Image 1 (cartoon, rainbow, N blue to C red):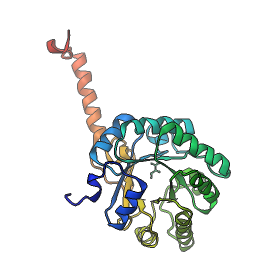
Image 2 (cartoon, protein in one colour):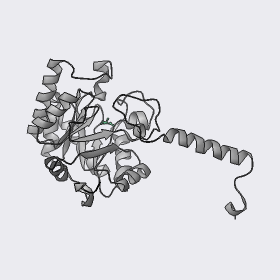
Image 3 (cartoon, rainbow, N blue to C red):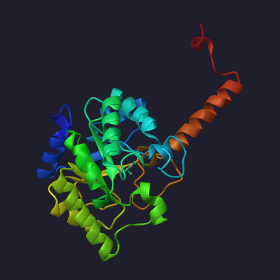
Image 4 (cartoon, rainbow, N blue to C red):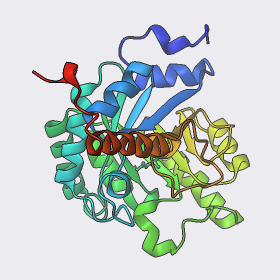
Length: 273
Ligand code: KIV
């Protein structure tokens, strides 16, 4: 642990991430959607916090990420920003706020940056959204790309299975990654693709590549916080490593509390005025 290069840096910026790639220090990234969790994750020393549109699933219980709105993402991102001192905070632009119309994309990005105070936005897609990426970058807003499995396009794919297994899709992903880099994205997330492809993209590009189910050859890793803590127990893809079973611990604690209330054990003498 002693040679964690970013440890002494007081605020992570996109430039710090670039230096981390050059020094081959892996980048750690997790999602967070609320003040209390973001505070803990930042205190633990994470490099990047993603206010992911997975908030639609994790926080709101939707089946896909499509329903979450710009205002809802602003609410989550501003809660996270209020908690964070050190991590770079990246916020997802939600479905329908940037595809197809670059002026609308710019308005969405400016609004979410102004209202939330986040450091950067993330967008799903390659050549199809490049005009929107350009417009947003031209306003000085850092953009993180997202390729491979793109949950906002689930209705096009019809499945959450591994992407880019075939040569055609794999070649398109490499071209899209190069395009995003050449237009000025500071980093790209690759989701659920073969490890060999993740490594190839990371070796080809100069910007940091963050993987979720993209193998160990990329420059950093991201997981959904509630999945890795075992709060959400319904989701067990192969790429997920569980670091706790907080779901079980929470249920046990709540059951203990119920028992104490029912049995009149709580509150005791010292717990009242
Ligand atoms: O929304 C999200 O949580 C994400 C990660 C899966 C990368 O985009």
